[in-house]
Length: 64
Image (cartoon, rainbow, N blue to C red; front, side):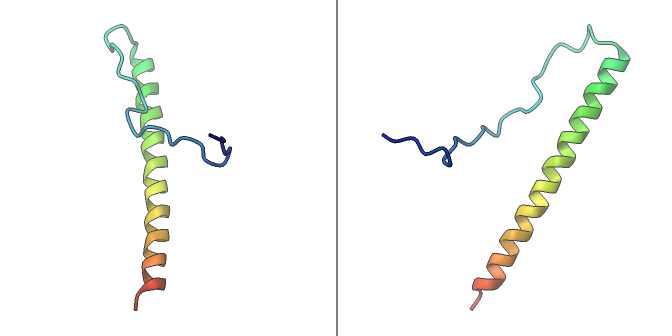
């Protein structure tokens, strides 16, 4: 089997931020963790918007 570098395996759509024990974290650490999670959510929302726009454009183009 020949490996095509363009055909990279898709990342799993599982948990991006691994659950950890929160008790040992400081308030600042928890706030930083929340900030990181919010930033990742914003990236996901933006990606969804772009994909939806692409899908809508394709659907409009091929509509009979």
